[in-house]
Length: 411
Ligand SMILES: [Zn+2]
Image (cartoon, rainbow, N blue to C red; front, top):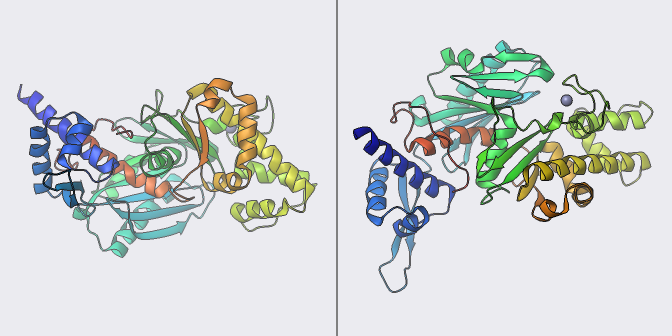
């Protein structure tokens, strides 16, 4: 019985915190209407959360005729969160307050394009210490550290990373990081953390069913159904980049042939362009500048224009599969190459998707660019400790580190 009361209290705190955090500032009355909790319960729980410093007042709003109502919001300065984007070429580390305003950033390049796990662990811990010094925050000020990594992250008792394309097989990243920090650690796939950020703050806000398609050097996706990320049996769901586009087609980094990634990932696009140029290398010191050069050449070069048109068609075909499989309300094209390609080619991508998707589900979906820019993986990673806070209704330390329930991104 005691347990039940405690669970109910925790559930109410979680519901109210999530509603406040994911929505606009609201009055107690708004909260009662939005959550279905009684005004008395809302008042009690809000009183508790305010006393703990988790919720603060955010101004007054007129109520017709009556007393003005106090608006409430989650306190941005309650604690800080750290987000790390562990990419294939660099580690970006950022400290945010709870409104996701960045306080400090540290970028450090990875020495190798096939980094070994020990080197990544050292770099993550060094970056974490450096960014906390730069932001002048101590361990007690930090709610937790979220890490978005390449590859699949299996969420068991501890997070394990499988990144076949760079030779990581069952790397116990969380266990390897533990001795280096006392802070709670959360690890997830970078495309999934970016997806969560777009759902909370960007192009997916307010949408229940969406796919956030991440196109960078590689290709991934976060599939959101009923506001939560679809994970599958061991969290690898959403590996859209390794679905077959061309039977026995181009060799993919995963070892298979004909994967979507081999055609629309930046590495694949640039390789196709190089081949179309008779093997001449594409100018640019890295993939981003090479892709920019390809886009710039499209106005004057027939070869560049053809490669881009084909890329739009391939991408549209891949998106049509997402429409047919998941019936999303929205597809968000994100990632640095997704922005670069989509910024130029979105009408053709949409047309190619329309040609190949079933008419009815296609009519229910919109295809648009991400709103959080090209570097939102660290921001997304920083939402992992926030999601835990919302799910528990309290910080992990105060909740006694009980396993969290999953929070819905669709409040
Ligand atoms: Zn593949």
